[in-house]
Amino acid sequence: MVSKKEYRGKTIYLCDKCGVGYEIRETAARCEEYCRKHNSCSIEITKEAVYTPKPVE
Ligand SMILES: [Zn+2]
Image (cartoon, rainbow, N blue to C red; front, top):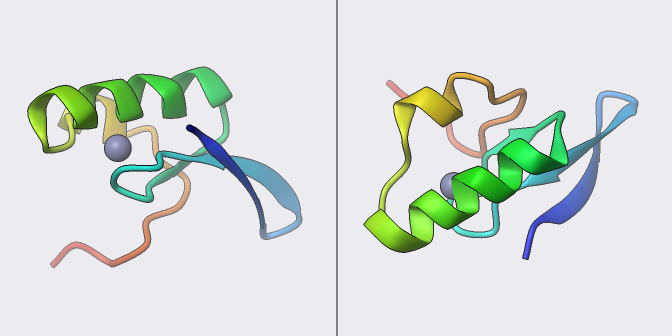
């Protein structure tokens, strides 16, 4: 389930698997589906992220 979150004054949608947030609910749903299937994120999808739970180093 994609969850909603308030972030910097706007509503974003979080992938329930990886916790990455998107402005578009559809994108978060795509991420979650991908994460569930592959147990990892798609770079193609996460490049659209507006919020990341942990900074990638
Ligand atoms: Zn994800």
